[in-house]
Image 1 (spheres, helix red, strand yellow):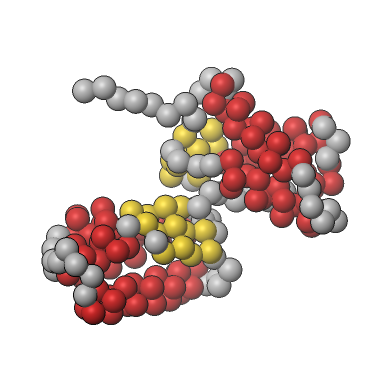
Image 2 (cartoon, one colour):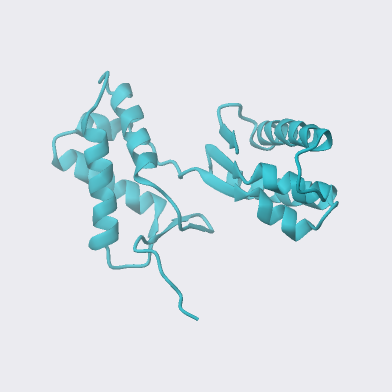
Amino acid sequence: MIGMTSPMPLLCVGDHEIANYEARWLENLLKAAARQAGYQEWLMASEVAGGVFVFLRDRFKRRRIGLHELFDRLDETLRRIGCSDVADHLTPEPPPMEVDLLKLASEAGDFYEMGFFKALTSEIDSALSFGATALRLTGARAAICQLKGTRFWTSECVELMDDLANFTRDMVVLRSGRVGISLLLS
């Protein structure tokens, strides 16, 4: 068996290790910091975020980097290039947490919605425990078909999709105590 490794180091956030994160996440945080610093549009955001990712991919020698270490390096870089005002407003925030709903449904088994929702609650709790401000729930349609034991989208599937959307929204607000968390269900 051949194991392919990602060229990017694992991003450590608390006890969690995140393997899939994108430059767009850092770019969005940089743009938000720039807006707080008074810039309407900060064109350097994509260049700085891209530069960080090139550094992590090509020059960073360790297999792991902590979230705060990454943001300390980013802060240092911003100050070095004369963007202290943006650095002053940059807040360490983990990338969007992705939850594979089809995987949860497969582990729960056909027709076992209760086990699925219990596992989803656990995933939401885990994501929120390390400060996630964005959750991406993928594979919803396939997961629902699996839970309903069908290959075709039915009215029961539509009903379960509505239940899933409402449950997830309510659970995120209840568990986090915040309403400002981005939630994408696809």
